[in-house]
Length: 104
Image 1 (tube, helix red, strand yellow):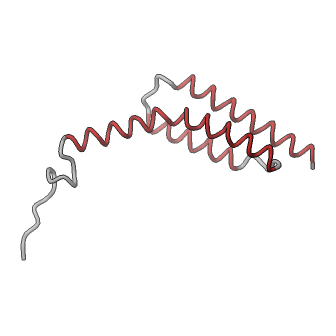
Image 2 (cartoon, helix red, strand yellow):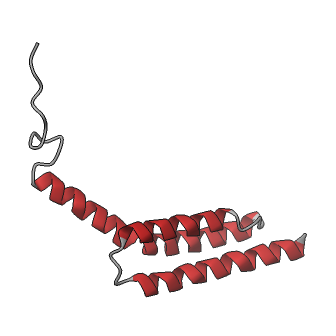
Image 3 (cartoon, helix red, strand yellow):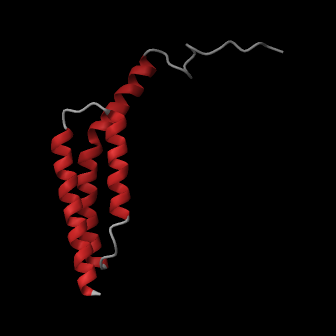
């Protein structure tokens, strides 16, 4: 059981390192669909990477959250900018671009 836990810990540590490397390689990218797809795949791999003890999981989870936050920060910033841009142009829900509804 300990060997399996050690193997799973090593897999999770390798995944965290891979995610950090992915962040560096994709910093200049603005292909948001691909970035989101890649991040979802990293998340799926994290969930499937096997069981580790509670203490080890707490340590690894903190490192994982930090790396994932760094990886997703540009995507979240672009989403916020997009929302702000749409709202400043009177996007749907603000009156402009809405169809007039006939009164009954």
